Image (cartoon, rainbow over all chains, first blue to last red; front, side, top):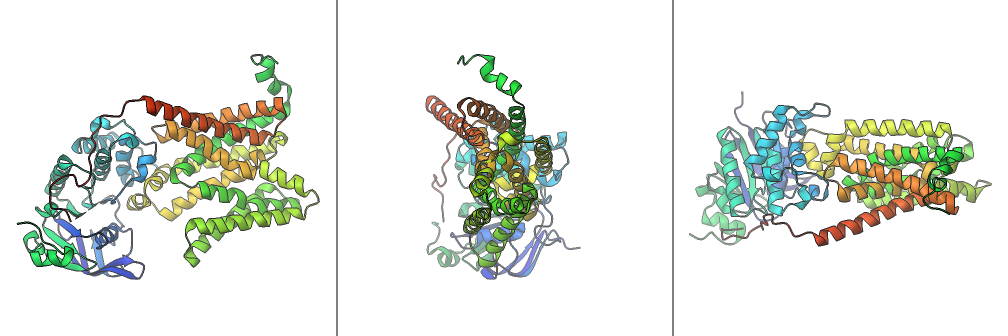
Length: 239
Length: 297
């Protein structure tokens, strides 16, 4: 049996027949952290959406937990880049986090004590439990992002696909995300995270540098070499 | 006239059977519209609701000309309208609002053309557009009750995917719910509401009952269930007040009900703005992206 949680072979991602990133090769194991780094429009979000099953691969092979992408909603959780629509809706923080359990509950199953416990725990872990009964539209951008992170954690998934999870967070929020990712990895969760922050790649198993193609892929010290960064961004990181 | 006299508030309904029927029908419409309207407002489907409410016109007009039930005609009109929107959007790569706008105007024009073949053109058109609340029969009430039951059932079964769709389509999809299936279920719910309500408030005004009470609920509510409850209360109260005003001042009933509902929203909006201005700014954390000294690309 294949031990890879996510495997891709010459995967081409894009919209319709229009490729955005070509030649993606992946072989991720439980507990791995893959960090996707690139400029806006480099294909990070397109790749994550493909892994989440929201868009079909243009061509190539992709298996997520030995199934085509998008076939296992209870085992894969996805945090979109700007989950802002809920901010105008009359929803309390607890309601938004509970939505993370809907994949398990389906249409008819009632939320059990276990589900409610998972929701409470997710809110505690993201430090949003004190705001549980507040409308999400009354919260700051950082608190809203913590709420969406709690929603993803409440899925209790085996794979987390996080599109810029630190967006809108201050330094404490960023530290919290790093701790959450580490904790999830420790329980065997595979994490794929898109970010603009080179520092987020520090503890990654692998980094993929993207510029509408795979510029480099490998351990952080290898994938973030100066020549690759210059090729990708036009500058290098300070030493 | 003594405004605190029962003769003003209660007796019109005690003394007139047609007003009692109108009140019952209006309340059923208000509750149906509150359920469907909550999701119309949450998902931002007001334009779709508008298009559907006008798109049923040729169906009703044809039904009246052929002497069959207007409800059957309205249902056929709504199905043609949604099928047309789906076709134009998929085949011609036009945005949804362009497709809806095209079909909406086309169907409205077709409805007027068909109605103009009728001997009582103006009367028929007015009846379809503005409803005939004071001519509601027992069978109309039964139809409205069935519509409420159906809409309630769809809303109950689809409550989770509807909520996810309102927040983010991707979230619905990655939670294992079909976007197309539940979007169509939501449209079906709106179609049933429009088709069942045109007799009461007319195709032109049903949108007001779908949007105004639900939008008022959205201003105050912290939860979807509360929003729906407020919408039902506002719709019911608008129906009662609208009927009373219509009775005492001899003005059109359907239009007065919808105008009252919109006035409720206006008052609620002013109230919330005043409350917001008077309340102190919250002390919550305000984190800003990129407000730090790390390498940022």
